[in-house]
Length: 160
Ligand code: FES
Image 1 (cartoon, rainbow, N blue to C red):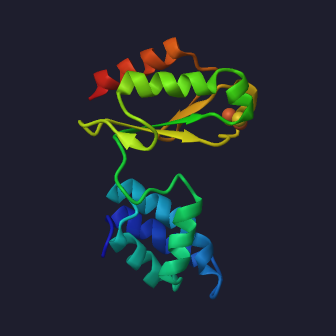
Image 2: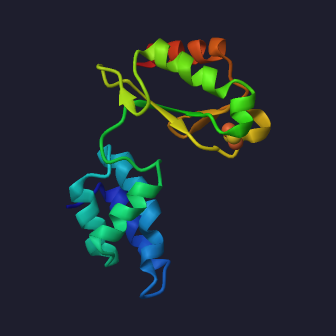
């Protein structure tokens, strides 16, 4: 399997940054970049990364089981992650998540039929001081309310 020339160059540089025998330090960034390009961490991606870093496939599967930002199946074009951990829970995170479910007509880790949105309830996003927090792809949104979420979703729909 090969990736785009840009990603191949990035991978080569990334792997070269680690001394021999420690190149598996590039595992998570490689999986994230591959996911961004391919759409998911597919079997093919796992095999390729396993081969390039000399990391057993099982070890990669373990990493995938731990890190929720890595997905085996393609997500929506806009992946909404809503935090319901303590700070966010105390400031309306659970209600925000439930509102998102109703608004999009999907549940946790599901995707809208048109493939535009996916939704995920997540642990702390590291933005507790600005709770409730959420993320759309790599963009953070703070001090969210159901009304702000509605506006955000509508603005994303207009981008389609
Ligand atoms: S608890 Fe939600 S961002 Fe930390």
